[in-house]
Length: 270
Image (cartoon, rainbow, N blue to C red):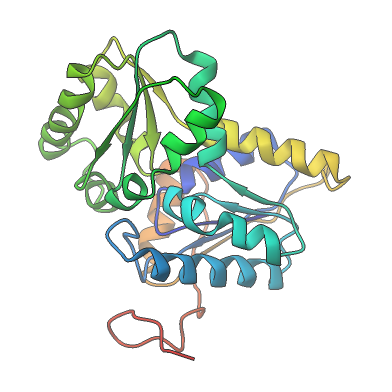
């Protein structure tokens, strides 16, 4: 099972997949060479995501999960048109999950600037509920805080207060965490806004993956999984993240996916 993100955030999805599909093996790739994706140009992110997904399939993945909202927003359809395996994103699942718990009022979306710019969440939500009001907030500081291990810090609390304010002022009672890094901040978010329902798309994404595999006769129901965690830079940080967030004692390895990259992490033109 191929799962990827720009960094540690996708571990929230990997953890749900591991819980729901205990016999399936995970091949997780963190593109830490290019984290964070949010501020990068859309075409660049699409290029990264499509190359990673193709690499995961070439490495034997029978399905690919884009555990990254930005990649889900800009590359899922292209991947589905070119790859021979099921391709799952987090945005469709997140939109459906939010509407399942929605009890009126606007729905809020906390996401990176890139995901906000794509309008992916409003588009998917309006396809299911055309009259729904959607308020988005770009949370610039969240990913760097999580990647640095500061999700419980005073800086994280201040950032949560700052980004929650416009959503609370708009009357939102349901808020989608539109980046897979953001669930690491849930303890603070819930403490700062106890009346809000926060929707983490990870569990719904895992369920969608299970259903797709079952429909195609690809679901593995028995056996011991063999997981592999790869990082395109700084595998030690991923190792710590896997142990901390998933409770797995394993050593992440360095991926050589970007061996043709420039020193600044920009992919060489082909």
